[in-house]
Image (tube, rainbow, N blue to C red; front, side, top):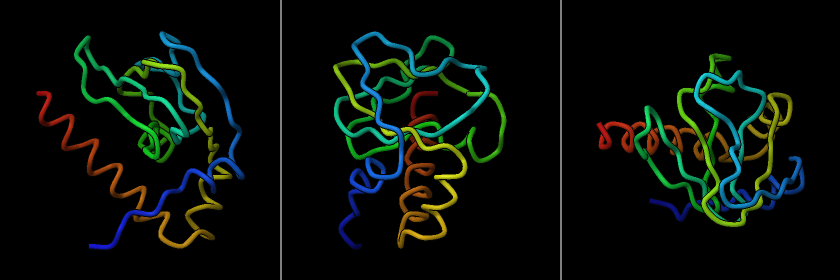
Length: 122
């Protein structure tokens, strides 16, 4: 298997970079989606029904599923340590899928990892 590509520099250049403090809520379960996020630094805790599903570290993404299907968020994302995230709205997301080689593989891997983490937490 090939070494994964670090998409943080693409995300930093194309997305909107936002800094978060520990305890900040990025989004809550049932919130409408507006963007996906790539963790540039720090980490984010994902919870659903008051259960920790996964900790997302730098170079990883969150919020992809709701951006793709337009459905409300299925989990809550809370910042665990000082973090910097790149926000990617649908227009920027589509640009990366269409123009950045291998980004779609990154997205599919993130979705697969999230599904496995959710299944493990059940």
